[in-house]
Image 1 (cartoon, rainbow, N blue to C red):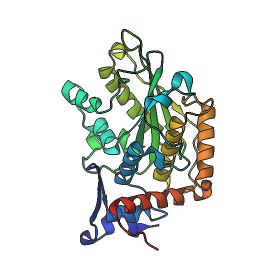
Image 2 (cartoon, one colour):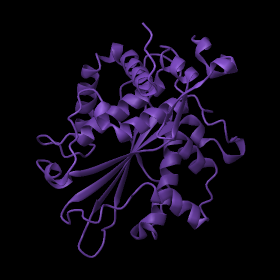
Image 3 (cartoon, rainbow, N blue to C red):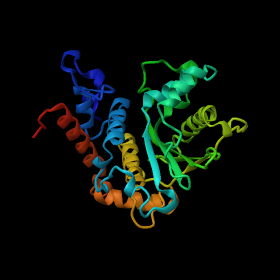
Amino acid sequence: GCHHCSRDNLPKMTNKLILNYLGDAVIYSSDLALIGCPNSWLNSDLIHFHFLRLQNEPNLVVGSVVVKSGKEDAADSRGEYSNIDCLFLDPTVISFIMHQLDESDEDEVSSLISAWNLSPPNDADVTQQNIKRIFLPINDEHQSSRMNYTPGQHAGGSHWSLLVIDIITTTSKNNETKPKIQFYSFDSHHGYNISAAKAVANKMYSLFQHHYSSLKKDVITSVSVIECQALQQSNGYDCGVYTLGFAEALLRLSNDRSGNNTGLLDEKAIEAAFTSYMNDMGGQMHFASNLRRRIGDDMRKLADINSPN
């Protein structure tokens, strides 16, 4: 094991703050040690940091088609599915939603949801489908009951997987049509986190019902979550790295406006996205160590620290 990498085993004086990215993601020297340690688990701070980086710098992903800004290329060849807006959620926000949010408090719910910009932009093309694609890091602690949850132990669970939510809306002249909402689960230990993913999906759906008036009347006892074919980890510690890799591959797919890519997450598109991503990451044998190294280098660059030899 890599026990010397855990934050708890580092003397407090050596564990110094090295980076406060965008005033939101805080990284300590122990986190840098953790990402550099090949058989360590990733904590929620590392997951949050990299998700925030992907939100702000989507071109960090290896082999990215550089995302241009501006309307002129938005609808070029993708046709009707050209507007995909990706949102990456913080694991601690998901813990808060699952264990602490009071859904009867409309103000609390609406201030949470307003930050997600769920409605298509006002100037969205009226003929166009808009996809809001939300990436959620799922931890097995998300399904634990409120009773067993202790705030502050935000990295309480041990297994990470990825839940992706697509909210597909078509803007019409008078108002939005009813959104179609789809949930996709990607787990490098197939089936392990499915009950946690379903619990989070149900909770998110009920939050969407607060936002989209057309969903308010729907009585849905349980939403369906599509368990997608995902690459499987071959050890007990790379689930967090795979979760980040799945997110990178799907972000790259979302930003790819070439050829016949509709942007929708169908089986063939997902498989092709994972295959090409893994090839670009040096193959599945080397993917985890390469991604750990890239994230560590990225942190050092932002914190202006020289990398170890």
